[in-house]
Amino acid sequence: MTIILATDHAGFAMKEHLKRFLEKGGHTFEDVGAHALDPDDDYPMYMQAAAEMLLKTPNSVGIVFGGSGQGEAMVLNRYQGIRAIVYAASNPDLVKTGREHNDANVLSVGARFLSPMQVEVAVEVFLSTIFSAEERHQRRIEQIDAS
Image (cartoon, rainbow, N blue to C red; front, side, top):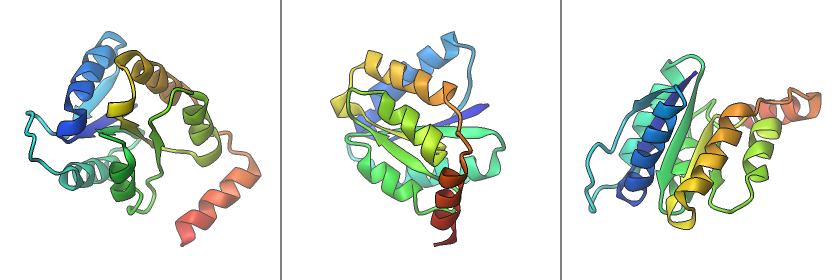
């Protein structure tokens, strides 16, 4: 599985931390930016790059960062086939449910609300949880994709 990473300035430090964590775990990732801290950058261009990479990379998921993670998820969820969930809380069961029930393929992290350890736990849950494929959940995803 390839992990696509993206952020603007608000999540830059957390993304860099996560890259080291992923490397230690032997994960393959692609960083589509930001590649340098720029306090004046804007997240939409990085989220668009992440969406394009996700859609052309089989067996990939995304982990993106922002201050709250909300705007980033909004951009990504405009793309057919991308289902981004926001994580800016302390309960990783939210991440698990997003993967199991909604087949989320992007985790949008609110970096201003989480510690590096909380992000590590959430990412481990995200990467280790699979879609349940229960009929009711599949049906709902198909309804979302049809809209």
